[in-house]
Image (cartoon, rainbow, N blue to C red; front, side, top):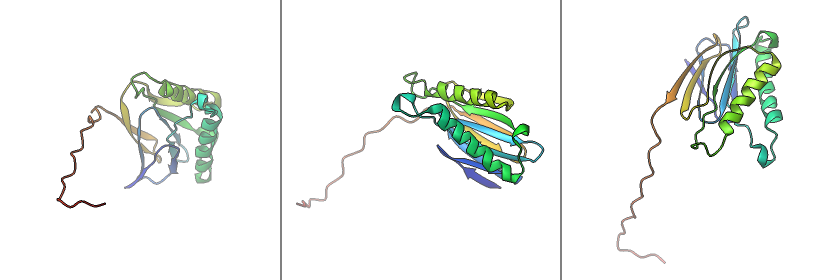
Length: 166
Protein backbone atom coordinates (compact mmCIF):
# COMPACT_ATOMS: atom_id res chain seq x y z
CA UNK A 1 0.00 0.00 0.00
CA UNK A 2 1.25 3.46 -0.93
CA UNK A 3 -0.28 6.16 1.30
CA UNK A 4 0.06 9.78 0.12
CA UNK A 5 -0.98 12.49 2.58
CA UNK A 6 -1.83 15.94 1.19
CA UNK A 7 -2.35 19.24 3.03
CA UNK A 8 -3.74 22.65 2.08
CA UNK A 9 -2.79 23.69 -1.42
CA UNK A 10 -1.54 20.25 -2.43
CA UNK A 11 -2.84 17.59 -4.78
CA UNK A 12 -1.84 14.09 -5.78
CA UNK A 13 -2.65 11.86 -8.76
CA UNK A 14 -2.09 8.24 -9.57
CA UNK A 15 -3.23 5.04 -11.16
CA UNK A 16 -1.56 2.37 -9.04
CA UNK A 17 -4.12 0.01 -7.42
CA UNK A 18 -2.32 0.13 -4.06
CA UNK A 19 -2.19 3.96 -3.90
CA UNK A 20 -4.38 5.80 -1.37
CA UNK A 21 -4.52 9.60 -1.17
CA UNK A 22 -5.59 10.91 2.23
CA UNK A 23 -6.22 14.19 4.05
CA UNK A 24 -8.13 15.75 6.91
CA UNK A 25 -10.60 18.52 6.08
CA UNK A 26 -12.25 21.25 8.12
CA UNK A 27 -13.50 24.25 6.18
CA UNK A 28 -11.32 23.21 3.23
CA UNK A 29 -12.69 21.06 0.43
CA UNK A 30 -11.26 18.16 -1.50
CA UNK A 31 -12.44 17.32 -4.98
CA UNK A 32 -11.66 13.77 -6.03
CA UNK A 33 -11.57 13.27 -9.81
CA UNK A 34 -11.54 9.94 -11.59
CA UNK A 35 -11.47 8.77 -15.19
CA UNK A 36 -13.15 5.33 -15.08
CA UNK A 37 -11.83 4.25 -18.48
CA UNK A 38 -8.18 5.20 -17.89
CA UNK A 39 -8.45 4.22 -14.19
CA UNK A 40 -6.63 7.40 -13.20
CA UNK A 41 -7.62 9.68 -10.35
CA UNK A 42 -6.50 12.60 -8.28
CA UNK A 43 -7.44 14.60 -5.23
CA UNK A 44 -6.74 18.13 -4.04
CA UNK A 45 -7.06 20.00 -0.74
CA UNK A 46 -8.39 23.51 -1.36
CA UNK A 47 -8.74 26.42 1.01
CA UNK A 48 -9.85 29.35 -1.05
CA UNK A 49 -8.67 32.80 0.00
CA UNK A 50 -11.09 35.21 1.60
CA UNK A 51 -12.17 37.70 -1.06
CA UNK A 52 -11.99 40.46 1.58
CA UNK A 53 -8.24 39.85 1.87
CA UNK A 54 -7.75 40.72 -1.78
CA UNK A 55 -7.53 37.16 -3.11
CA UNK A 56 -9.68 36.05 -6.03
CA UNK A 57 -11.24 32.83 -4.76
CA UNK A 58 -12.79 31.80 -8.05
CA UNK A 59 -9.76 32.22 -10.27
CA UNK A 60 -7.33 30.70 -7.75
CA UNK A 61 -9.63 27.74 -7.16
CA UNK A 62 -10.05 27.22 -10.91
CA UNK A 63 -6.27 27.31 -11.40
CA UNK A 64 -5.84 24.69 -8.67
CA UNK A 65 -8.46 22.48 -10.34
CA UNK A 66 -6.80 22.87 -13.74
CA UNK A 67 -3.45 21.88 -12.21
CA UNK A 68 -5.02 18.69 -10.85
CA UNK A 69 -6.63 17.83 -14.19
CA UNK A 70 -3.46 18.62 -16.13
CA UNK A 71 -1.46 16.26 -13.89
CA UNK A 72 -3.95 13.46 -14.62
CA UNK A 73 -3.86 13.80 -18.42
CA UNK A 74 -0.34 12.40 -19.00
CA UNK A 75 -1.53 9.26 -17.16
CA UNK A 76 -4.32 8.79 -19.72
CA UNK A 77 -7.23 10.78 -18.26
CA UNK A 78 -9.50 12.71 -20.62
CA UNK A 79 -11.48 15.69 -19.39
CA UNK A 80 -14.83 14.58 -20.93
CA UNK A 81 -14.68 11.27 -18.99
CA UNK A 82 -13.98 12.77 -15.56
CA UNK A 83 -16.30 12.05 -12.61
CA UNK A 84 -16.12 13.80 -9.24
CA UNK A 85 -16.74 13.42 -5.54
CA UNK A 86 -16.52 16.44 -3.23
CA UNK A 87 -16.01 16.65 0.53
CA UNK A 88 -15.46 19.22 3.31
CA UNK A 89 -16.65 22.78 3.73
CA UNK A 90 -17.44 22.51 7.43
CA UNK A 91 -18.15 25.48 9.66
CA UNK A 92 -15.33 24.89 12.10
CA UNK A 93 -15.43 28.23 13.94
CA UNK A 94 -18.95 28.12 15.31
CA UNK A 95 -20.51 30.17 12.53
CA UNK A 96 -18.08 33.10 12.89
CA UNK A 97 -17.08 32.75 9.24
CA UNK A 98 -18.70 31.23 6.17
CA UNK A 99 -15.46 30.14 4.46
CA UNK A 100 -16.51 26.47 4.55
CA UNK A 101 -19.79 27.27 2.81
CA UNK A 102 -18.00 29.42 0.23
CA UNK A 103 -15.48 26.65 -0.44
CA UNK A 104 -18.34 24.16 -0.94
CA UNK A 105 -20.16 26.56 -3.28
CA UNK A 106 -17.00 27.01 -5.32
CA UNK A 107 -16.58 23.24 -5.69
CA UNK A 108 -20.17 22.68 -6.81
CA UNK A 109 -20.08 25.68 -9.17
CA UNK A 110 -16.77 24.62 -10.71
CA UNK A 111 -17.96 21.08 -11.42
CA UNK A 112 -21.25 22.33 -12.85
CA UNK A 113 -19.57 24.95 -15.07
CA UNK A 114 -17.01 22.42 -16.37
CA UNK A 115 -19.66 19.75 -17.00
CA UNK A 116 -18.01 17.25 -14.63
CA UNK A 117 -20.67 14.97 -13.07
CA UNK A 118 -20.55 14.76 -9.27
CA UNK A 119 -21.30 11.22 -8.08
CA UNK A 120 -21.16 11.92 -4.33
CA UNK A 121 -20.74 14.75 -1.87
CA UNK A 122 -20.47 15.36 1.85
CA UNK A 123 -20.36 19.09 2.50
CA UNK A 124 -21.09 21.43 5.39
CA UNK A 125 -21.82 20.65 8.99
CA UNK A 126 -19.50 21.41 11.88
CA UNK A 127 -17.22 18.36 12.04
CA UNK A 128 -13.86 17.71 10.44
CA UNK A 129 -13.59 14.84 7.96
CA UNK A 130 -10.94 12.18 7.39
CA UNK A 131 -10.83 11.34 3.71
CA UNK A 132 -9.23 8.49 1.80
CA UNK A 133 -9.35 8.18 -2.00
CA UNK A 134 -8.23 5.29 -4.20
CA UNK A 135 -7.39 6.97 -7.54
CA UNK A 136 -7.24 3.73 -9.54
CA UNK A 137 -10.87 2.79 -8.88
CA UNK A 138 -12.48 6.07 -7.80
CA UNK A 139 -13.54 4.84 -4.37
CA UNK A 140 -13.64 7.30 -1.50
CA UNK A 141 -14.01 6.73 2.22
CA UNK A 142 -15.01 9.61 4.46
CA UNK A 143 -15.36 9.58 8.25
CA UNK A 144 -16.51 12.44 10.44
CA UNK A 145 -14.14 13.31 13.24
CA UNK A 146 -16.53 13.20 16.17
CA UNK A 147 -14.17 13.92 19.03
CA UNK A 148 -13.75 17.49 20.16
CA UNK A 149 -10.33 19.03 20.27
CA UNK A 150 -8.92 18.78 23.80
CA UNK A 151 -9.20 21.91 25.90
CA UNK A 152 -5.89 23.69 26.46
CA UNK A 153 -4.22 22.81 29.74
CA UNK A 154 -2.04 25.20 31.71
CA UNK A 155 1.67 24.54 31.44
CA UNK A 156 3.24 24.03 34.87
CA UNK A 157 5.96 26.45 35.87
CA UNK A 158 9.45 25.00 35.49
CA UNK A 159 11.04 23.70 38.65
CA UNK A 160 14.20 25.59 39.53
CA UNK A 161 17.47 24.03 40.62
CA UNK A 162 18.63 26.83 42.94
CA UNK A 163 21.05 28.25 40.35
CA UNK A 164 20.47 31.78 39.16
CA UNK A 165 21.76 32.76 35.74
CA UNK A 166 22.21 36.39 34.76
